[in-house]
Length: 121
View (cartoon, rainbow, N blue to C red):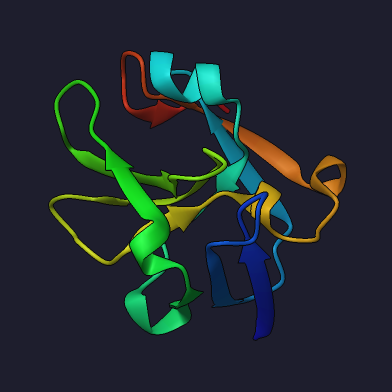
């Protein structure tokens, strides 16, 4: 297991992820994800693999559409940090851009959140 430490742009929100080496990411084509253009983790992580180190009070949550997902972002710099699904709170995906990793080296999967809720590739 690797340990990845991430943060929002201004550094107010810091978090840690324990994961196998990150080699893939995903992009969703729903209207919200398309506009924020984030590369998210390909998998959901359990709470025992994810820890907020600081700035929990600096997070705010956005609900879109069917309100199935809690999208958390820093209320100071606006960076999306992670999200969890309402039906499985605490288990979430992270914004891989918050970590010091080369996003261009990742295999990026495309997810059809606009229509089918399935991977496109």
